[in-house]
Structure formats: C-alpha cells, structure tokens
Length: 260
Image (cartoon, rainbow, N blue to C red; front, side, top):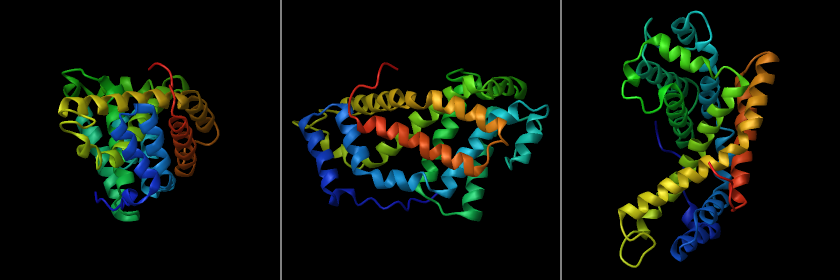
C-alpha cells in the first residue's frame, strides 16, 4: 500500500497547539482532543474513502460467513483466497489480500485504507483467540466457532468497539508519530524511550475507552441492518461515518471517558 496522505499539519495553528501541549506536559485527554481537532479534515476524508468502506464492509461479513454451513466456501465467495481448511493466519492473510486486490482494481492506495485494514485484521485476530500460543495452529472449525459468536448484536458490538478503538488510535498515531520523537531526551517531555512507549500505550487505552461510545449503536445497527436486507457497502459506509464521528467527538471533549 502507498502512503499518499499528505501531512501538512505543522503549517496549521491547531497543530502548533498540539506541539505546545506536548511541550507543557499536558495529559492524554488534552492531547487527543487537540490532535483530533487539528486533523478533523483527515477524519472527513477517511469516512468517505471508498476502499476503507470496502474493508469495513468485508470485516462485517466474516462473522456471518462463519455462521454458514461451509465456512471456507463462503469466504471464497467473498473473494478471500483460502483453501478448504484454512487456519487463522490463512484467513487474515486472505482478508488483507482481498482488500489489496480491491484497491488495485477500484481505488487508490492510501494511509486510510491501511489503517482500516490493519485494525480489522488485529480485531479479528483478537476475538478469534487473543494471546493463545497455539492460535494460528488451531483448526478451521475452532476458528469458525469463535468467529460466528460475533454474528449477533450482543457480540458484534464488542468487535466494533475493538475495531474503532484500534482505528482511531492508529489514526492519531499517524500524526503524532511524526512529532513525538522530537520530545524524547534530556529536559524534554519524555526522558527516554520507556516514557515514550508508556505514553503510546496510554493513548491506546484512552482510545479504547472512547470507543465504548459505539457499542450500543453498533449492536443495534448490526441487528437492524441484517434484518433489513443485509449489510451492503453503502450501509457499511454510513456505519463508518456515524461510528467514527461518535468516537472522535468523544475524544474532542478532552475529558475522562470512563474506565475501560
């Protein structure tokens, strides 16, 4: 994938505020709020990006595919190039390949679709087994059993929260990662790499907390949309827009978002 999202934020007054907050030792909520405010135009581009919408739509199809009698065949019908007995590594690789193929045929490489693609793969991997040491060796049937649990409003909301927490964190990190290294060293915001890493981990935890905002909405949306004709790319696009708006608006508030 390419990296064609041009970052001109250092030229903008709102981005200078982010830099000032970093220099002054401001907390995660303030920095997250300022970052979203400074990059709001990018959020608007992401939620309209055709390839990003496709990647999210494909993510919504995996739990449904796992509920079918022939899981591998259903994945193949979704243009995921898997064998008749795929493990999780095969499925995640096929998901990424399907998105890449879509980009090659119908869109353009962008930072946005990479963010959505990677967030989707990580979320699917997490719900399919988390930190299990044998995760990628488990049978197709076991992976299918785990994934099909999310073909319901009750569990899809958990997948949505995981996905949007990762996505919005990755979005903010895309911008912050160009500036944060300038604040590592003696008499700077981060005395060492360990403090820098701790900041990044705290930002991720904060993003996940903010993504709780989409849980109820996502569950209701999944149930209603499946009942009313199924999930189309157009409906997935509407979902992406509303959910991202909900999470970024929560982050822009700049205050506590509750315990994770």
